[in-house]
Length: 353
Image (cartoon, rainbow, N blue to C red):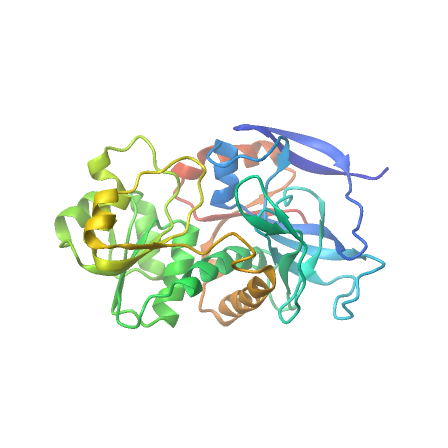
């Protein structure tokens, strides 16, 4: 039996480099050889235990670029051939930190479904939306199509109105991607950001933000009822005084009936200011995970558009890449997982080539 190397998450903050069988190519799908995978805050949420699977171990990693090495005997798409490079978006479809993975793709214009009920209260699909990558796109850049897709799903579901004053909460990679999309596509009156990491604030001002605030700065310098639209790309918040919680600060700054878009996923309960939500009539919204509300074939159209966002330069994906780490350097990878929340870096791409 042929085997491959993979990084298993055995339990929160415990990983193991293992040899496991190469997965069998699905009859209606593809076998991909991994080329590059960028590290996502969702991977870190699993690593830290803020998200958790039905059972361990799992293989993290879903910002993925792979090369088609085998095609299932019942796969009918004549546009896919051996050697094609593919990026995918799947709701719970991880497995990227391994040398091979399988995929049952849906490309833009196709309609397929194979739905199943998860134990986390939403319907998912065994397919994943996918896009083929042209020869002129760098391997290292291509995995960032996945987080761009995720940001676009959220923004397109609940877009800002032209002329809105926009606040982006959290200026890690997803906040910067969202900020670029909003600034360049949705015609805001203004767009600023807030993060407690000064270096990330510098990154935000480089990419999209007219002014990047620390939480204490925005509290003092910006009047309440200022922003029409908030994009919340914050990670799990814990051990913060309630008065200084960035979400509470943002809810003070948003106008009555303002739009508050929640992006980040955490199964750790987070605090929201019920009184401000009620008294101001704040509209809390999100792009649903549930494929019966947002079908995978619709996300296939979004991932095609996300590719165009990067390919055209609307989203500066290459500028987001701070670190490239070889997959073989297991100890360094684990260190990156452990220090992700405190780093001044943006995207780390794991290179399997």
